[in-house]
Amino acid sequence: MARVNEIRYVGYGVTNIEAERKFYTDTWQLIEVPSDDGMVYLAAPGSSAAFSVRLRPSAEPRIDVISWSAADRSEVDALAQQVEQAGGKIISQPHEMSELGGGYGFRFFDPIGFTIEVCTGFETRIADTIQPGEPRPEQISHVVLHAPNPQEYVEFYEKALGFRVSDWLGDFMCFLRCNEWHHRLAILPGPPAFNHVAYDVPDIDSVMKSIARVRSHESDILWGPGRHTAGNNVFSYFATPGGYVVEYTSELERVDDDNWVATVHKPSKEIMDQWGVGVGGPATMPKSVTNNGLFTAPEA
Image (cartoon, rainbow, N blue to C red; front, side, top):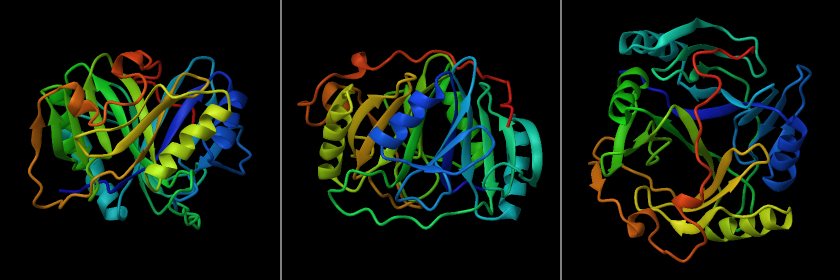
């Protein structure tokens, strides 16, 4: 089975692009990438991906596209076939892409209407070396989505893009991997919506220093710091000016991809947060609302 191998970027439609740009560059410490197409591209300093966030001016907020990478062209072609066989609706067949970064790829609607991209051969950058304790993002760690029927949605991503289940939280939250990391995608119940995107930083010190920097920019933590059980990662959640939830995380568990056995964790406060000393909790997180961009391909 063909398989995606990493998350590449998340594209947002935003109503106040300057406020989001300022947050990501000043507060979140992403690096703006030059462009001339009216959109803003931002790279995670420790990532070789040319950009990790794309911002497009929009009359209403929406998730434009979630992009995944694949090993090579043959893998992209095979994944396009798998997507169709699994019930995804192809927007564009594999082709030479003209968007910033280029590459060879395709886009499709997943079963609840998110625009998903799979690409290979795109431009890269020389990644910065992020030192322990340094409060700058290394890369996107994972994305979390809501779906009305999580079990069916999980099955689609297994069949279409080759994800594997790492763990469940009860019968409602699933953690899926596409490489050695415990999860790159997680799925929750609810209306079709985007929950959050997480960024890796090197260690706990980096998480704590990142919290201090966010607070110095007149924003504050929504939930954390704490440590989840599934994935064993340290977490801290925040919101951009546009209301999109973002997370700093560290120490996400590496798994033996071929031999890992999934666990069903019984939901509890201690499972959600092993420490229980941070501020907030799931109830303090912004309520996810149905994505405005479902089954509507972005303009670019």
